[in-house]
Length: 237
Image 1: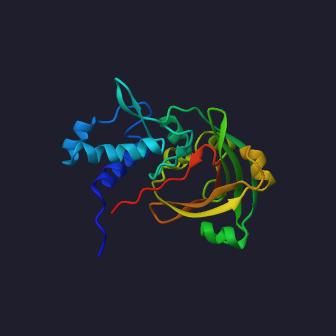
Image 2: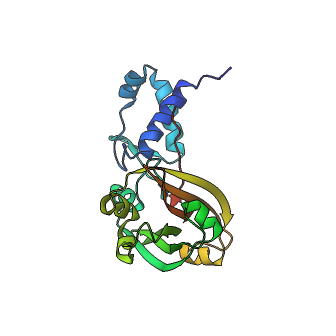
Image 3: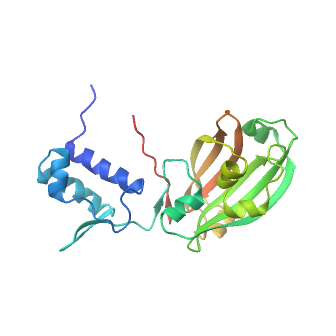
């Protein structure tokens, strides 16, 4: 038998979802307790319990004479919908920048060939990018892309947005991403790039980008700076 979710928890989750999806932005007023009571057909005590939890966890802030507003933590949530890093940051009012650390052509190993669904030994781009926003490092990315499929790929595209290149230059419809999430300890390279202490626990995400014809167009591993970026997923039915 499935336990029914408490009403205050439903309200709490709904508000958190809207904050995560940027429907409620930083400094936005959320509906009043009276409005939320009417929306969810519950008492104001139930609403207060939901918002108390979000205030305690730093998502909301009560301002006397004004109301309850969204208070962004220092960290940024990864949106659970397909967007490039540049678009995500711009939507949050931040200034994104990508530094291409490495851009070389090499032969695909057996592992990379399987990930990109190409032949072992085929030429691939190996790319390392440092993803920044407001001059702070958010992500270090290592990626592989087929040279044969994308011969015109260049550093100038990578300094902007891979998603823009795939969708607007190549007219590819990106259908989904497949993520494999792992917890690792930052080695010397990652600690230097992300500006964190050696052996800091971080999240790495192996990401395969799939086009509408079920072709894998990009395989990457992203290393997230835990001090500024949260990996946050919302599952819906």
